[in-house]
Picture 1 (cartoon, rainbow, N blue to C red):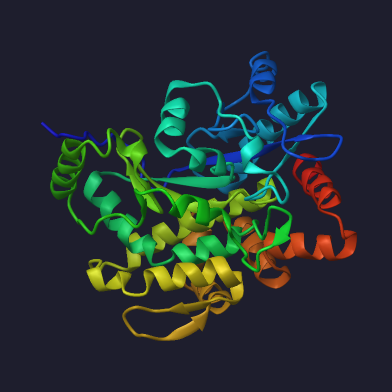
Picture 2 (cartoon, rainbow, N blue to C red; picture 1 turned 90 degrees about the vertical axis):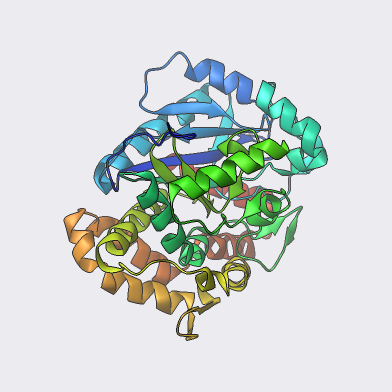
Length: 371
């Protein structure tokens, strides 16, 4: 009997989780209103799920299992409208983005739930500093060995996902010079970073058994890896993206990952190697720091490219899979990001025009709620 049963799942299915900011309509600072908005939302009928997150100034929306861009966008819009309507009733604004630009972590309040209280006790002030906002993408896998294979192969492209989704240049009232600072908060946790290099589920179960025996972890939720298996869902979960500024971008990035996964499974049959991680940390840093202009090094050929160039080349390679998965509109959205800049670029341009981060947050919220 398997130590960690892997649930059956349709290969290449998609699920999306988005962590959202709850804002005061007076100054557009974060407000601890998650209990209020969740009570209001409970009165509505809506697809997917809306859940609390670790602090009371954030909530999370989760889609059901989807397969195509158009249906994913429709469900995300429905969830957005549900949350937005509840926000209007309570005089709250909602926004995407990976960080709030001027909130102070010390003012945040832990959501009263057993797991969140446990994390607060364990991690101290880091739990409140975890008031950052990410997009998680689940890709369905037909079995556990396929999940591990895809996890390691997709790890090569983690910088793509960071650069495309980056929306967190501002922290504590300052431009950090980074495109994505959200991941810095994740990296402080002891079980963050990359997953261990194991290629079959039996070996992964042995690793998990050793880790639980030490008492360091109790479940898969205790691993904050960039990509991790989710055996109870039959998926792998990509966890490095900032929450984008619009529903359409969030769905497009999810479908980009889905289409790349299809390409990898069909056209990249070579086994992952430990040396594939040689420049993993460097490439990830470049994406966080410089976004689409960051340097991307191929660990097998040692070739240097910009992330912009590597993503452009990837779009050409996955063209057939894009058609098969009916993801053409999603890939047009990715091309628009390459042409116009990511969310971090939009935020900096908006601040250069407004010279006021409160106004930036108001426009950021309008973009999410009205788009």
